[in-house]
Image 1 (spheres, helix red, strand yellow):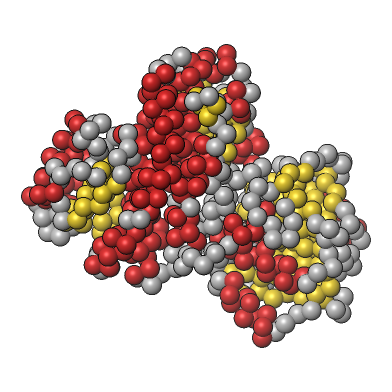
Image 2 (image 1 turned 30 degrees about the horizontal axis):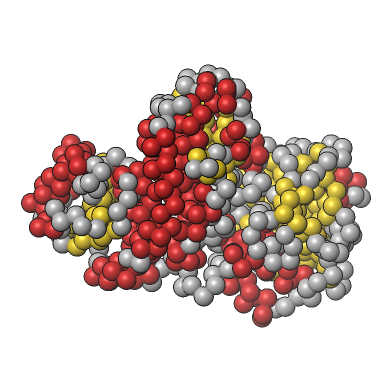
Length: 616
Ligand code: M6R
């Protein structure tokens, strides 16, 4: 949930740390801090509550000159509120050691009591300071940072990535990971640590993903990785697929605006290389063996938030093409229901970050029960794809805004490709259906550009609705999860009460919410490809309109049936029913962005949220 960066090398240490934190701020932004070995050979800390800009102000007022060793942190508070004192780094060994942490130490109360009984004074409410003091005490006893660090790490329960440095061992940062992400950046005469590659991608694209329960020690010249007992482990390097520009705002007013615009390419890149001779072929699935894929008799998609709505959309397509029953479960509910699983079950996890703790834990639970696990993920070498039997990466590029947009459409795309691959291997997909879907994908980027071009119309609509206190969304079939997603976007970044409903459910309760002027977005299925659903949704529109709703209808171009009943009509290009969600969601994303902007809110960094939820 927090962003961490470590640096050792000859370049400007403060700048290297701030650079990393700027790109990691999406992970948490309620306080930030750095610690460096300074010119006097001591540890200097600068930290402040609030966004990174406040730390930068502090550094301008009270600069620090560093000598090539430093750690930096951007926080999303768990233990202790977002105050200056609780901000990381925390100190141990009389200020000779600094430490930062991402995660939660579950046995911190007992460790804290142990320290207090020993007369150690703690100044913050955090679990992190407890760890800093423990490591500091061990260094004082053993005289060696690595030994001390290992001894303490083995005592911790919970989830953590930890980075520590000591003034008596300049030029070295030690780190450990247990259920939280950690990557090493391999530079030329300098090395980095980060929560993800964004921490160092402007300096190097050579990276190493540190494995679970490993310790990585970096100096300017070397990287050493061991297990918690100090035994060396082998590691392999990978090249980061994108460059620093991809993670920059590039002139857009917000990352979210940039990422909405990038969706046509995100979808195109996710399909790229996966259609061979007109048929979908995903090598990562082929590697599982066709016999294994043919034996699958049930698929469970697990995910959270927006990713779960992508899963819901995908479930319709996989079922239709592969004729396998598919259900979608929230990751954090999955293991508590004692699910019925067998070796013929496939669990598909969907996660942009690949680090969402709820989803990771659900995947581990599935692995323990011997099911086949497939990860749909946007982040190279993240934990979930590495734990899974197969990884089908979305190639959306880095998504920085907390509100997920391009990852969502890329996730739907990847799930559709999985459905088409399974359908082909299992012989359930007709040649015509396959060719039609491939053709739809070929046309999709251009149609998505047209959907993106609804921005101006949506901006005007949002302008008139800036004071709206509640918005409802209705959809049927694949439009239902899009209604849920439209509502989530609005809650998330515009702080407006919003709910999505299955249109058919309306008269079973929610219609009581309809009052004069209540805005309702309705996703209207195509009258060409889904005439029955279309007529039902038009009836739903009439029902809510009769009760005073303000109807904003999202229709395919040429659909005039809703015109008499809609206050606003947003027209999208023609697409087959299963492909409509990839277009329909775009105006809803714009709507949330525009309402957030109209309310003067921070579109990219909404309150109380962080991009990647790495605690359960
Ligand atoms: O990284 P993940 O895809 O696993 O994240 C899952 C959710 O936390 C995420 O989709 C969240 O709902 C977004 N902020 C929605 O915009």
